[in-house]
Structures are given as structure tokens and as C-alpha cells.
Image (cartoon, rainbow, N blue to C red):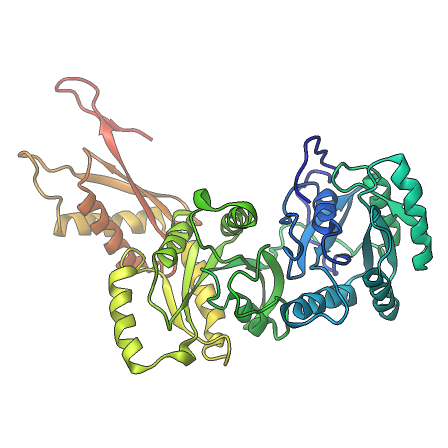
Length: 467
């Protein structure tokens, strides 16, 4: 089901709030393929975030989204289509849906009202009964009063009253949300404001480099569907994972094949969501396949993370497939292809065997410390004065601009402003940045250095730096 005109956002706008100390209630949305689960999820959360397309099987993992209604916060989990006796990848998708049911507080079971109950729906009901979870039966695609009458036939499924809803047009959605709130457990207590939540980490990379495998290795369970076919993940998959004694919020994203401007359909929206996941993250783990040459697409993703100003760890996955010849060529590829991001932390690991996965948490902490590092103004200028005296700017046209002083304008990422008597050569600006890193570190974090030349006040007059 694709988007439609007349979209009305039902979810209430997000507000600044303290993080709950207890678990937020979870609502799992399940059903056979192509009954409109992702469209209903978008309706519940009040924004188009879950990938929606007419093709069955677009959603493959269980994908959680924050939702809010009538002042209550909860998590709604979108799932792939459930089918009995599924094989291969369809079986893994169905297993993810069953895990979502097992971990949910309330299950929303979606049936297509225009089709009525099917053998697959009846098999799903048996699975839901075994779970012993509260189940709300939704008759989706009930776009008019005539279909609302047809939906009453779904009483035969034995799940109680069917709730007629049109996820596409919003019909009946408010009543369903009210009913969901009634079925949720009591809200958790609220902590004092100011406590920090889990650090946000985006797992990014081109298709089939092992992002979902790494997520599953870190989570010590099957959180995401893994398949040798590239492009298994479409939606970003959020997971709270404990790594190195600390809880992190990991987002497994769709593999990016093309530039966003060249993608279409599901891939276009998945690309936008991956870019959004990078923007929402604090640090990105860029996975590369160590057994294959570093590609143009790998470099494009690295550039995307750097330009977003996020801390970065580059993880060379599938290290178990390496041989001496490949290592020789990889060293040269790193020197040639990654010279623009020498500051990124590099790890060699294997999601399949677990090799060096324990080094990921220390690397993430180092990158985040650098990303948030602030240099005192006095210390910064004492270092800068010594630097420009030892290596002044080259003379150009009989003159050499002088660096007057510097200040750190911000963090996350660190941003520095150099106040000067005139424009600096790009090469000298890069020299200052390189020396800044040598002195203060910033391993794993981009650093922005900008120049503000002093304004001229008139012919022969003294000038001043402008802020």
C-alpha cells in the first residue's frame, strides 16, 4: 500500500520528556503479508517512517518505533508478513514476527477486510493463542460503511470484536489507539530529568557486508534477518544492546547501493531513512567487506558520515576470509582510498566468528570522547601561538596573513574558528588541522576548522575580526 492524499497525522507531537526507568510498553503489529501492517504503523506513530510498498515482503525484520497517544508513550513494532510452514528467508521473517509477539505487551493482529479471513489468518490465530498475549483484531482497509458491515464476519476468528480501520485514510484509527492504551500495562515511573539515555550508533555500509550479522552477534540473538541475498534489511532496525558493560542503541540500516537521487521505490525511501539514521546517531560504524576491494560506494558512505559530522569507526568485517595476498592489497587500498579520513578508528573483525568484536565498545567510547572534547581557550591559543611562530604562513604577494587567535565554537563535532588578518591558504588551514589533531587527539571524530579574516575598516585604517 503506497501513500495517499489526505494524510492526517494522528500521533501527538513529540515533547521533551524524561526517559522512563522501566520498560516502555511494546505493541507488536502482526499479520500475513500485504495486509497493510506498515501503513497502520505509520498511522499509529503519526509519520511516514515504515517503508510501505505494494510488493509483499518489504518489511523483513521486527522494526520498533517510538509512539505517543493521549500522553502515553509506547513502542510499536512493525513486523514482516507471517506465514505458516515458510521456507528459507520467509521462515526467518516469520520467526522475527513470532519473537515480536513473544516480547510484546499487546499484539495488534491485522486482517484485510476486503478479503476476509484466510487459512493463513486462521493459522496465525493459533500461533497467537499459544502466546497467551492480549490480542486486538484489526479489520484493515475498511474504507467505507459497506466494508464495515463485511468486517463483522471476522468474529469467526475467535479473537473477539474486530476493529474496523482504514490505515490509509485514518478511519477508526483514533478508536483503535484508545483501545490499545486500555490494553497496555501501567506506565513506568519517570526518572529525574537530565539523565542520559543510551548512546546512538548507526550501522551503515553497502549491501551484504554483514551489518545484520554484526547486530545479531552483539545482541547474542537473532535481532535481524540475515540472508546471503543483498538488501535483506529495508527499514532501520533499532536495538538496545549491551556491549562492553554499557547499553547502546544500535540502528541496523539498509545497505546503500546508489546515490539517493538515483534510487527509486523502496530503495529510495530506505536510502532516506539510512541518511536519517546517520543524522540521528552520535557515532557511525561503517562496515566494509575486508575480502573485497574498497568500492566507490564504500567511499560515498564514509563521506556521508563525515559530512554529517558524526564520529566514525570503520570496521573491516569478514576478516576470517582474509588471505596474505588480500591483506597486501588492502593495506594499499587503505592508504589510497581512505586518506581523506585518516582520523577514523579502524577495526578488523568477523561478525561470523566473533573475532575482535569485543574491541568495538572501546573504539566507540574513544570516538565519542573525541567528538565531545573541548579544549580550554587559553590552552588552545598557547599551543597555536607556538605553532604559527615555528611555522608561519607562507608569503603570498609580498604579504603573509597572521593568525591572531582561535576559539572552539562547539563540540559534537569539535568546531574551531581561526581569527586572522586575511584569508589562509587551504594547505595551511589543513596543516593547522593536522597539528591540532597531533596535539589534542580527536581520534575517531571529524574536526571543523574555519577562518574569519579581519574586516577592513577603510583605506589605511585598522581593522577588527568579526564574529
